[in-house]
Image (cartoon, rainbow, N blue to C red; front, side, top):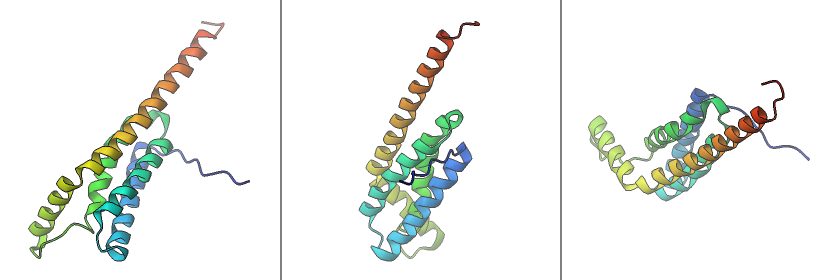
Length: 136
């Protein structure tokens, strides 16, 4: 049986992964579903999960920071521009962020919980290793 990929992303790599994934999902959403924000929000949760799982131990703190940025980047293709050029696009992005805040907070919470659990497990392993070290 084949194993699932288990990459270890740096903080920057986690940001690039989540940002690229959300941008691609935003473009697919605009093309296939007519800018459905519900689809976009649901697809944000697995990206948050993978980012939190795949980030390296030393860069755990960066995961809850980069996923909200990725959410905003991915909203660019599906935000309503209102026909007003750059300012219209910016207003559409701010409106989409405000109306989709529940998905944004939920995904960030998922990432934060997973990162916290991983950090606690890492600290416990380090404490156990330190306690069992006969040469201290």
